[in-house]
Image (cartoon, rainbow, N blue to C red; front, side):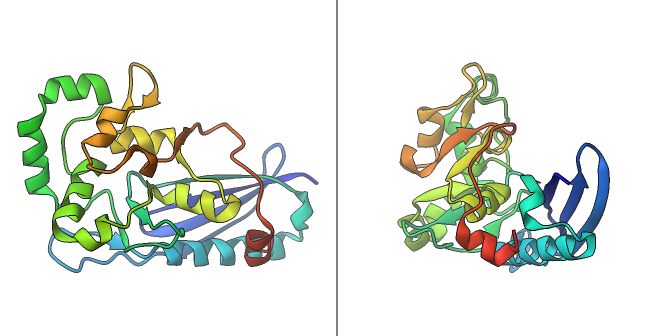
Length: 228
């Protein structure tokens, strides 16, 4: 029996679904996620909780369905966006995630609106200059957490990080990259100038992946942890 596993890295819960192809649901499991607000208007989460949830969910789905790991033909991962995750050069998380609803970067939004004509920005990036823009959050980190900013080697989203934990492949899925404000919608590509607005080097934003591509294979380490 060939099956596919779906994972949703949500704001309030992590959800997993196991489907026997083509369309028979074998199991649906969720785990709660803790949203923290250390200060008014802030919204953060611990990505390690997402990963722990994924590991528990996959093991439970396999156990309750009786499906062997070898019968799972593919995994699809989605999630909230654009959450912001920051890794150092060794792949370690530098801080909790900053969620899409986080409103700490008002001053940086105002700064960007002075620097850039918003109509031209929308035409290029397909986004307005607002609190969800990852560039604004990165500028906030640069200003208020310079020791963190100096160590950023990778910035990407919630499900990008889970994909990386599963496969070891570093990529920014197109919907996150678009919502983040890094994509030139006319070219359909991550744009050097848009990334430069964040004051990060271009290499910090991984290559753009598309949702239907095979990103990679589950590593032996991830297989052991998740039961896959």
